[in-house]
Length: 161
Image 1: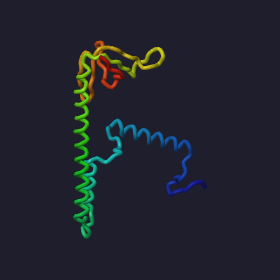
Image 2 (image 1 turned 90 degrees about the horizontal axis):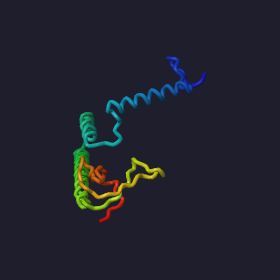
Image 3 (image 1 turned 180 degrees about the vertical axis):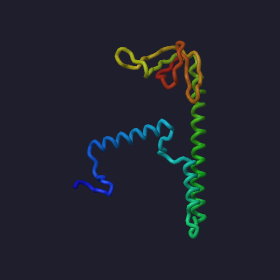
Image 4 (image 1 turned 135 degrees about the horizontal axis):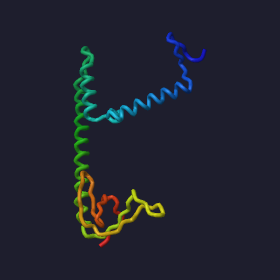
């Protein structure tokens, strides 16, 4: 007999049809997780860390509780994580504002833009040339208006007087 047989008559080995069926079921399940917004978390954030710490405290052995030093160490790690996340958010806001503020210097300047979505006859990104007419911001992104069309500032490849 091939494989391991249990009381239920199941074999420990799968034939290719069963493997394919199982793979399809797994992929369908993973897709359903993504569409319902329940995509698996690949990194531990502050909320997950705090839940883990609380769970650890709730299920600790009452005869051998967590030592004060361990608890203080974990709370210190949590505090450091919180501060790093706040600093990262503030840095992103700062960089976004700096990018927008530096866009004001482009007003009235001649620019060349490469638009990655539009290709010319040779398959190269289309180059747009013109004078910056205005500067705007949408969320964290800065835009310039050239020849009546708005472009992200990251499309700029050359600036001249």
